[in-house]
Image (cartoon, helix red, strand yellow):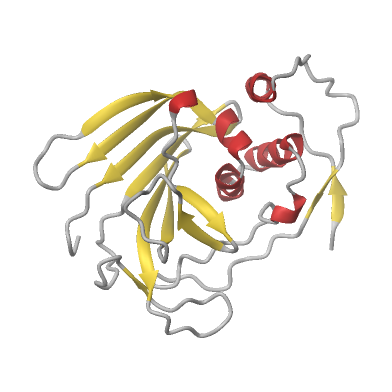
Length: 233
């Protein structure tokens, strides 16, 4: 059933960032004034999850791309997810909308490359405006590698793992996979394999990790970590 809700006002910090992104002048929001009404859909739970078939996108109340009709609407709904404490819904918007990423990315993102051959990690601090390496995109109901993941093939998908640590910090680990095509129909693509064809193991090292820290009643991206995997790792 489709129902109307009043989205909460953007936090002050997010409002300032929105003004900068949209290049418009803004004043403090009048909380007592009526906000624009938006449509939301009921949450649909993902029906199956496993290590081999976990790349299917979880469907949430904010996963309907048809509703993305403007920057302010997307930001309102992302902020609503923040206030509800729903990180996965917030992350869905973060991946889909460049405007949301600009607003909810820290002024500086720590980008670290870890090597498995003994070399020390390479660490850089990248200003938000220069950060172009966000690794994830959405296609249909699947997580896919973004163009910045240059080593990924066109037939690759991503498996995501969400971990919350003390203090409300979230880490989103992502692993490149291919599917064997032994499908059961529907959204199922078969069993997930590593890009080199080896079976995906619970101990497999991910290709990367994104770190989000709480900020102004929401979260913002603060770190982008990449791992150089050896075969069978």
